[in-house]
Length: 354
Image: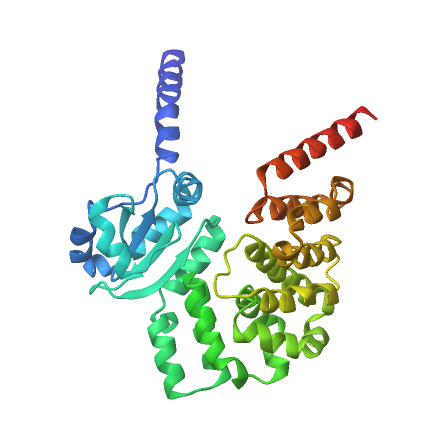
């Protein structure tokens, strides 16, 4: 009896590691060798969609997706059960035509295609497992395909169908196309919809382009936006766009804009309560920059006005923005900027010594 018990214990201890290994069996996404072969298999075993994981080797978000989200059992199981899967390194020259055809520009991108290679859905960037599966289920539904949403809107031009188009563009990461569509249909929405929190995620992206008609219209109707959205939210978004515009102006990137046009818009920064103390300084610096050829001392005047003590007294975010702003000014003499940076370094050394 004792001998039999001993043999059973030996067998038990021998089998435990094996059972553990089986219980922790590694789950992986089954990828096909290449896109062409993967497309041929669409429709097999009830998997009527193709998922293309477009990655850029060395990109941190692509690596994060590959090493974490795409290793989770629920994600692997869902992809293996519902898709023919293929991964595509966009740095390989042979994929150039595919990249152009699908207008890829952000990575990682996940394309959901049908058996003809037609796009059903798309989304971009790193997502945790829960969000990834939510976006994937949205993208795999043909109802949400951009072309289908647009066709529905053309047949029934309702605000609900317009929102569906905006969301389809937004989910696909095609922000430029979304903004262009928004520009065309912006005024079919009544004010309570146009300035609603639900629409804000689309509108605030359009406001980043201060030259767009939406930006101009938004400024004219700012009192309504303040009422529906809240003044703080509105001012923060507008000031962010104007400050960036000011930086582009002084760096010489606004080729088709004259000084009067630029200053007219930048000057409105002073009317926005954005809680950024730097905004007032930026307006003055831009005004001095516009006078640089008249005074002959414009660059020196800018640095004198935006002295190291003034700038370093700002909040960190503002301080860093103004410093970047100064370094971006086109034509700024290197000697002046070198002296400014020495003063900047000396200022902080003194603060550390106190």
